[in-house]
Amino acid sequence: MTWRSRRKNDSPPKAGGARKPSAKLWGIAAGGAAVVTATGVIVSLATGNPTAPAPASSALAHSAPPVSEGGVREVDGVPVGYPHTQAGAKAAAANYTTVSGSAGFLTNKELRHRAVSVMAAQGTAATATEKADHAAAGAVSALRGDDSKVSAKQAISRTGVLSAHVLGFDAHGAMVRLWTTTVRGSAAGHATPKAGFQSVTVTLTWESNDWKLKESASSTGLVSPIDARQASNVTSDFAGYVSAAAEDPVLSGAAGQDGFPTPYGHNEQGTRAAAVSATMLYGDPRFFTDEDWRHRMLKATAAPSVLHSVISDTDSTARLVMENRGVGADGKTADGSELITRTAALATRAISHSDQAASVELWTASVGGVAGKDETQRPQIAFLRMTVDLLWEDGTWKTTAVTPSEPLVPSPPAMQEADSADSFADVGGASNAPATA
Image (cartoon, rainbow, N blue to C red):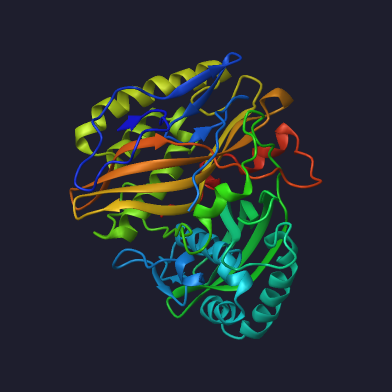
């Protein structure tokens, strides 16, 4: 797999071919600490990220595409069909939250009501519909930007899940608390879409052989500052991520005996899912602190032709991060501070696809830093686009290159101060990892 910084004149590979593997790992050292891209997604481990503008370019159905055969599928724009596991509950909670925050859901009443009827548990549809309509009305000011009214075609409303903590789980129900980042606004006008953070508690029930939504409650979540070197983009740069141009990530929670995602469908949806999972897994703190986990994860996700160089590159990167931060194998520093890294996909776009090769562009949000008393190491968030190249090998999609592209950065949250560094300990650890695609 190749990790490198994409120059402006770079172009994605044509279907049927992949970039030549390289041993070069793209990273930056700043102020004695590393700003590392371990998947082509920046994980902010200090203050320092590249800044640049992004390229330009609806219905709810576009926001939640059908997924690979035999797993999660789509009904009226809603992913359904989850495993009866904690990971399945995490995936359902994440997908239902993402759908409920999508532009199509918030701007189209008919689509919204159909989606609610799919998600809602028995006896809760009427209340859920009323609540969804109220939320849609409240989103108007955010989605219109500086225009006088909302344009559904220009609305930007994306949600990325940064952590998922299971508060309760048994055979009949589950409660999951999500930490999410949102971007809402319009690709028209002059007001750049704004970032936001939410804590969403989702209550699910196991019904009709699937996880159904019983209740959802949200509040302001931990606020992470946007990396100081990432400047907000202009409004038109977000045009490639309106509902008709890009799709929301869909998480499945499915995993094999090795704990990593099961084989993906031999279709475009399968490539999107494989790309999303790779970015999430490479942004996991275990990527840096647990060599055995990292090697097993790479074997599960990377193409055999590039596996050796990927392992060599990432081992070096992990050592650099741990040395610069003074982090041990337990993910903590000598004073008990914890390394925090998470990556969420906000949207996906297919660049090219054939039976044997594909390229997918992702818009991502990555949080990285240290949860402790040192505010200079407070976790920060960085917004980046990247291209994931994949090959069809061994009955699934495997990554061959993950290439960082130009950032796509929203405005900071309005009237919200960043939380203290030690507050972020609540979202660290393997137990808080979101479900993969």
